[in-house]
Length: 311
Ligand code: CKP
Ligand code: MG
Image (cartoon, rainbow, N blue to C red; front, side):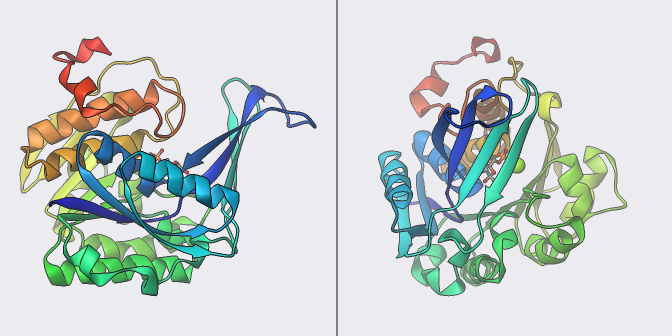
C-alpha cells in the first residue's frame, strides 16, 4: 500500500477563549497541534495512508495525542517517554492579535533521535514529508530528520519539505544552515515567499524563488501566496493555482492543509493540476475553520464541491 510517512512532534495547545491578559480562572481550550501530524491527519481524511513517527510522553496528554491520531486513522510509530508533552500557549491579547509561546524543551518530542526512525518503514513509503520545525527542536530531532532523509534517498523515496520557519525556535541563519542541506536532497519544497527567501536570499518574486530552489536540486517548488493562491514549478512546468475565496477565520494550519491536499493527491496518483486544486481547497478549509487541523475535510466532502464557490 502507498503511504506517506512523516516525522515530528505533537504538542498540546492551551488556547485562551477570551481576549485580554490571562487571569486566574481564564478559560483555556485544550487542543493538539504539530505541523507534521496536521499533514498526516489531512492526508488520512482524504483517504490516503499516513504514518507519523515521533516520541510521545507517558503523561495524560501523550495518551490523548495517540488516541486522537489513531482515531483519525493515522498510523503512529511512537516510543513512549517519561519526559512531559510539549505545550503551546496561545493568548488572545486583543481580538486581532494573539501571542504564542512554546514550552518544548526537555520534553518527549525534543528527545526524538535518529534511533527512533525505523528503516523499513521509511524505505517502504511512497513519500517522506518533513518540515523545518522538527530540526529546530534540537540535535536529536535534527538527527532523526536527517536519518529519515538518508533512508528515503537511499531507497529512492521522494522527500517533501515544508520550510515552516519558526522564529521562536531559531534564527534565520541557523535555519538556513540546517535546512539547505535537507532542501538539496528533497524532491518537492513548500514555502511561503519569506521562507523561500531564507533558502535563496538574493531571489525575489514567486517565479524566481521557485526556479532558484529547483536549481538546488528539487524537481518541484510550490510557493504559497496566501489569498493570492500558489505558484508552482514542477518538473520544469509552471502552474498558477488561485486561492479559494473564503472569509479568513484562523490562518494557523493553512500551510499544512495545503501540503496535505497536495500530497494526498500525489499518493492517489493524480496530476499536478488536481494536486494543486485540492491543496488550495484544503487551505481554504483550514483558514475558514477554528483549530489547526480540526476543520479539514474528508474526501466525501471534497467530492461534493463541484465549484470553488461552494465553501
Ligand atoms: O504553517 P502552519 O500554519 O500550517 O503550521 C501550523 C503548525 O507545528 C501548528 O499546528 C503548530 O503547532 C506548529 O505549526 C508549530 O510548531 O508552530
Ligand atoms: Mg507553514
